[in-house]
Length: 430
Image 1 (tube, one colour):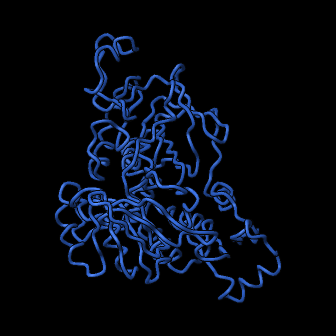
Image 2 (cartoon, rainbow, N blue to C red):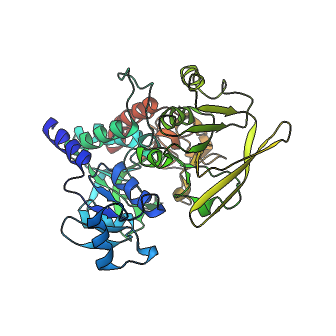
Image 3 (cartoon, rainbow, N blue to C red):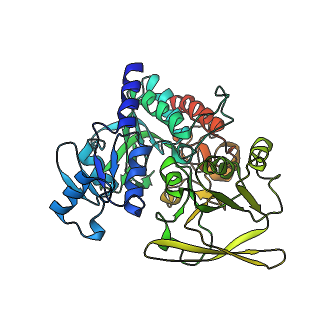
């Protein structure tokens, strides 16, 4: 196992054995595909045709239109023009075909820390496990530049490194991992339960674990979606940070994830303008992060401020206007990159009409969050008619991590819930 991990690390560092992406380095689709490959731990190279003669030759040979960039040269010689993540995954052998005939002991929807922990413990105990995720293993935690407070890592660890280790560990025990695929609905009217996927396949499982976490919240800024992926980002990885190249950038948000991103970005950007809606960071960010940020000479905190407008064109954002909510004063800066860390909403829309109860904010109710009226009509046995602590209003369907109501939004807590859910899965299977 150690040899496998070190070999993969070497391949990633050199880009050997993987696809070659050819196109402008800051293009939205180039960032999208590089992010997909990086987050899934797959080696690759990115070449700028303006700087590399080989890449320039490939461009002249295939003459792609602007909307066909980047070109992807696969290891088998196939050339793809601006493929989707699934097209690229299928070509690289990352996407496995699923069978509608197989029945899994447990299907885990979401490959964040909670889902990966559940997969590791379930597979190690002999259960047949299927893990599904729409983009990459690791979830939001996997995009974290550095997790400082995870037990056992006193110097911190990147979310990518932590998730990568868990991903390999789950596979070692036999869990099947499928990325990228989206679960569009859950059918609880039949047994085994059926999960419908966006590829048209229906998967059957005796138990289901909801670990879909949360989706990034979009603030009400005009034309925001127009610049997503090429000037506006919801996470900071080395790919996005490298694009900042001694530029001034804006980061919005006052939580711990925002603080970790600021500390990381400060190593790349000339200056980080930090906007928060509140008067200070004390209520939303840990003291250790606040102290580190205050020690950074190239970070300026703008309290009680919010973005009201952005300017830009085909190349992306060129300017940002923000307003002080207290005194109404306006500021304008020539900014090309904006990082938004303004919270997240539960990613539970796919549970509509399946009988799983969610609260008024969309988080899944489990255990003590459920009232007798929620489960009295359900098929719990007479000698055990209460849901288990992590069980939803549907017997055999569990929720863990950020998607669960009353959960502690910490990586360590999500991992603990993933492990605890396996014991409850055994109980229901029995």
